[in-house]
Length: 194
Image 1: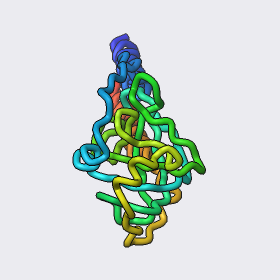
Image 2: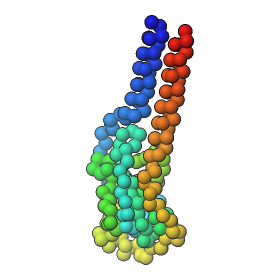
Image 3: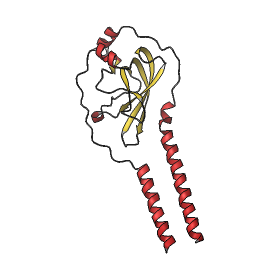
Image 4: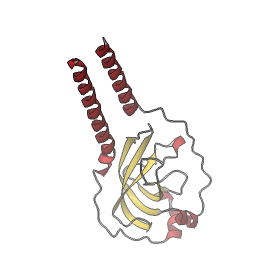
C-alpha cells in the first residue's frame, strides 16, 4: 500500500511539473500608451539603431510568459546608426495593446530601434509604434533630415535564423522531462524491490 501511495504521489508531482513548464500563465493585460514621437533629430539621438530596409520575413513566437511576439528579418539598404550588416533581425509585439509594429513582408521601412528585453528573454533590437518607424514611402520628412545613409559594410545571411529562436526552450524542456522520467522510474524500481 505504501508503494502505491508514493507512486501516485510521484505521478502527481510529475504532472504538476509538466503543467508548470508547458502551460504558461495567461498574459497580463497591457495597454500601449505613447507620447507623440519627437523630432527626427531627437529620435535618432535616443535610438540605438536607425536604418532603412526591406522586410524579408516575419515570424511569430510565443514567449515563456505566454506573450506572442514577432521577429522580423530585414535586408538593410541604408544605415544611419547602429547597423553595419546587410541583414538584421528586430523584435516587436503583435500590435495594439503591446505596442508592436505591424511589419509586412516585402515592404520597405525606415526603422528606429533600441536594445530591449521587452519582447524576449534577452536583449534584442526592438521597434515599437511609439517610435518614428514607418514605411519608407511615408518617411520623406525623416529622409530629408537624415540625408544619405551608409551602405552596409558586412554581408551576412540571417535567413533561417528566425526558426531557431526557441530551440533553447525546447532543449531545456526535453532535458527536464528526461530527468523527471529517470527519477520517477528509479523511485518506482526502488519501491518495487521493497
